[in-house]
Image (cartoon, rainbow, N blue to C red; front, side):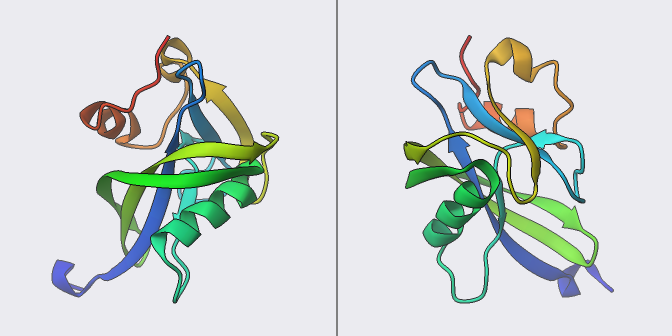
Length: 137
């Protein structure tokens, strides 16, 4: 398979900060990235908008309902049968109680010091830094 013929899998992610400037992260329960910390997100289902996918993924993975805001950036990551094209959106929590669910084995609000101690998915910290979305503290 040549690079131009690889399947593109559209995904979304949520960049969510709390009132203290901490960043919402989940520990992935399944491949790819099993055991690694990342922002919540996943695949966009056929016929689904990015906004609907972000909203669905947040509820499934964290128990939180959000309002989806602006696109903060996008990245491409290798997939087993193609490439994940991931569009990350700024979000605000509107309701819910944080809990790990679905594809997440844990969920937490993390400050800057904690973020740098966690095993994170490849390129996460760099992308968040480029987008000025790192946690405070």
